Image (tube, rainbow over all chains, first blue to last red; front, side, top):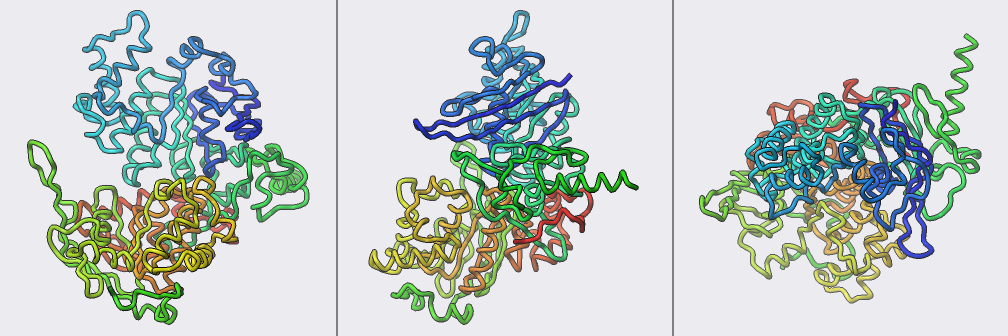
Length: 334
Length: 297
C-alpha cells in the first residue's frame, strides 16, 4: 500500500484581500513505502509549498484549498490541533534549508533532543537525562557526528554540522516520511556531497520514505529513485531518476538538463532558460511553459496538457506525447 | 586620485574600448592573514598562508576552494576591507594594504565587488534606479540627472530591458537573477577596472546561472575589465576564467590554465572538488550526444 496518496492538492496564497496566487494546482502524488523521490523546479514553482502542504506545515497567507492527502490510511488534509500532532509523531518530519539556523543559540544540542523527545513522549518512553543522552548519542552517530556534539552550542558547529544536527532531530521520532527542503543548498560543494551521502545512506538503512526538494537536478538525480519536475504549480514530468539523462523529456526538463555540463569537457556549453515563469495570480489558458518553450505549437496555447504517458513515466506535453504515441504505433506495426 | 579614473561624461574611458591598456595589474605577493581567536586559549587561525598571484590587465582569474579555504578573506584584503598580516597587495602602483579613508575611497572607485547574496545586498526600501545611481554620483561626481541617464545605460548593459521599467522597481519585485544583474550594474557604476565577484551565482537557480556568467564574460570582453572570480563551483570557473588557483586551508595547492587544471588535476583536493560537482550525466561519464541536449536559444 502506498504510504502517501495525495489527490487534487491545491494551495492558494492570499497575501492581501483580492490577490490570489495559485501556487500549487491540482497535484496528484503517490509515494510508495521506502521510496526516495525528488521534487525539482525553479524558485517559485511551488515545490516547497507542495512539501509544506503534504506535511501540513502551511501557514497563512497560504491555504490548502482542496484535495485529500491520505497518509498511512488517514486523510490528514482535514486534521487539526491534537489529532494533527498525533499524526505527526512517528508520521512525518521536515528538514529545512535554513533549519540549521533554527537551533536555539543559547541551548546545547542535547537540550534540542530533549525538547523533541519529551514533547512527544509516550507512556514507557525513557525521557530521563540519561535516556535522552543515550538516544542523542545514537542519533548523532547515525548522522556521522561525534557524540561530544551533544554538549556543544549551535555557534560552535559549522554549517554542515548544524545541518547534520537538524537531520538527527528529524530522525529522532522515527518518522515514516521525511521531507528534505533544499537541505544542502546553503552548503559548499564538498560538504553538500558529504551531507547528501549521509541522507542517502540513512534512507537506505532505515527505509523511511523521503522527498528531496531542490532546484538542483544534478543533486536530485544522484540520490533519488524517482523525480517529479514542477513548473508553475504543476507536476510536468514524473520519471525514474535513472532514465533522466537519456531520451525524450518534457521540454522544461530538457532545458534544466541543459544547465549542466562537465567542467572537464573539451568544450563546455552551459544553457540557461530564457524568460521567466508565468505570473501565478493570473488564470492560465494552455500550457504554462508555452511562452518559453522552443517546441510550442498552436494546441499548446489552447489546452493545458495533463500528464500523458511518456515511457517509462509521464510528462505533461502535447508535442512529446504525440512523438511518444507515433513511436508506439511504429513499434506495433513492426 | 588615479589619473585614469574619472570620466565626467560617465562614458567608458577611451582606453577601455580599444583594450585593457589602461587597467593596471593586480599583484598579490606573499600575502598571509592570521586571525586571533578571542578566548582563554588564544588560538590563532591562518586564513590565508603565503599566497602570491597576479591578475593581468583584462584577465579573468578564479580562486576556487571549499568553505574555509581563505578565498573570501583574500577578496576582502584585495578590496581593502581587511589588511594582510604580511605580504603586499599592489593594484598598479597603489599598495592596497596601506590605504586609509581617502585612499580606500579612490580604490573603490577602481575596484568593485559583487557579492554572493543578491537578496541581502540591496536596500529593500530603495528602487533599482537609486541603488545604481549612488556610485555614479559618489564616484563620478555626476548630477542626479546625469546619473539617471547612466543608470538607463547600465541597466541595458546588464540585460535589464526595458531599463525604464526596471529602474522603478523595488528589490522584492525582482527575481534572484535580476537582482544579481542590478548588483553588477551597481558595481559598474563607478566605472571600475577590476571586479571581484565572490560566488555571484551560487545562490541563484541553476537555470539563471548561465545568463549571469555570460554577462560577466561579456563585460570583461567589451569593457576590458579584469575579473577576479571566487567560487567553489568548478563548472562556473571554467566558463568565466582563463586561469585558476585552487586554495585549500589558506594555501594554493594547484594553479594554471583553467582548462588544463580541470582536465589534468594533480592535487587530490582538486579531484575532490571536481567529483563534488553535481552532474546529471556523471553516471554515463559525460553528456549523451543524443536528444537531451537543449539547443541554446
